[in-house]
Image (cartoon, rainbow, N blue to C red; front, side, top):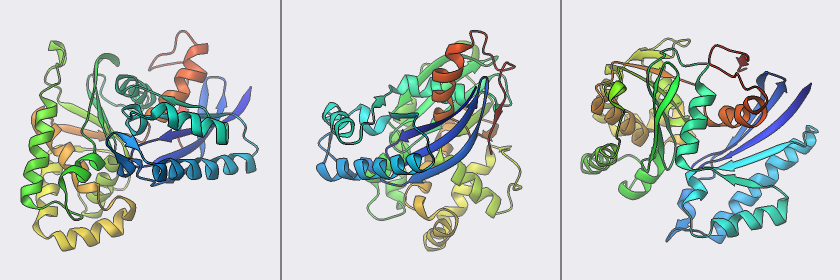
Length: 318
């Protein structure tokens, strides 16, 4: 049986709608749309402001109209760090439910990491290593062996919350960069990696800023257009290169990813710190993540007890 499903991912920086065609044990992406709402910028004293709630509601209304125009009536919506730590999260859920009839599921940081790993599993090349999903307000870490999740943790280091906390203008100064790096390493110290994989050599990453960093590497000729795996040394060299001339870097960011001009550098600092902290040798960029994991868990895995990496479904991303 074939069915079309709309999945809305409410992040701290970006709200994204993906439409998938699901056919028993396989699925592929039909349509994707995103809006850079930046919900975290409307959080004051751990409360999403009325303006922020209105921004969220209007975005979801536009997405709902898009789905109705496509005659898609199966809609799932979930929120990550954007809503899970708010004091008024229940109020936000109630307003959206009453006004749009959309039920938002808030998932924990650990669940987000597990779902993201599940969604990316079919793209991950190395059977053992470290997987991260870096977003606007948090980064999820999954240490895995033979594609089995051994340890998951979510840390409050995201490109947008670091930007909001430490950066005065668009790109961080040297002093602001040092403050950001100090905070990232402080958070990384909370990780209790399992002994059998405490020093992973391979890092697999996903997230909008991670894909934007790949675009920068392609721009500089450090990576071919069809390549998604590269030496971890490229990240630190890219950081040094972009730090030389901030005006030139700003123009480049506007050219490559204008909607991420204020978060790309912080995203790069996160990735550079992680590769340094764990002495990573190789990095792979994934295009799949939490949205695909959510789909797999709810509509595929639940109906297929023997779901495995090798397995019974094939994921096709268009």
